[in-house]
Structures are given as C-alpha cells and as structure tokens.
Length: 132
Image (tube, rainbow, N blue to C red; front, side, top):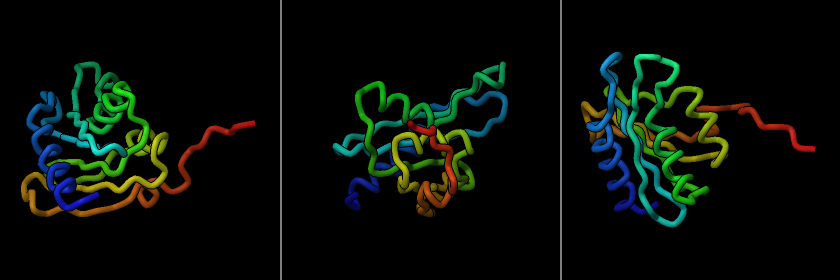
C-alpha cells in the first residue's frame, strides 16, 4: 500500500462514518477497504431496532466488496470515536478472506491518530472450517 492509498483509505473511512445509521447507540463507525486491484470500497454501521439485525461497518464494506467480485484485500481502515478495533464477528468475517489483513484504527476525534494492527494479532486461533 502506498502512502497515497493509505491517506485515501483513512479519509474514506472517516467519510463513511458520517453516513452511519446509529440512532440507538450513537456509536458511528466507518470502514474502508483497499482491494488487491487498488480499488476502494467503504461501508458504515447500520443499526436496527431489532438489535440482532444491526450490521457493522466492516461487514458492510466486506460484503459490498465481495458482491462486486473482490476477494483479496490489501488493508482495512476503521474510523470510530476513540479508534476502537473491530468486534469479534467482524474479525472472523474478515478472516474468511484475509488471514493477516493490515488494519488501520482511526480515532475520528483525532484523525491524525492512526494505529496499525494485523488481523492475525486481533484474532489468534481463528475458526477454520475443517476440510476433508
């Protein structure tokens, strides 16, 4: 990932956050993916009154990318107030496509504050379906 791509990924995650539908938690999340081919795909969290139907920003971005034919990714950026990592479900969802995806955690209150992690660090011992 180039510095220019990194900057765009961070900017897009922050912009996606402004589209979040979070009337219950008020916790706005934006996510942006950089595909292997260099395209950017983004998503935001979408809450529902039936909490179980809520969709996290990371899964929205990954689902949108997969629906567009992408299966390999260079990086994922997540923007939240405080710079929080993805939930366990999103970690497992991402691991389906990238075993060790670089993840940029952006504190939207201080957008210049970005920490980097990797999916392997955030999800050790991930579930893998046993293949015969």
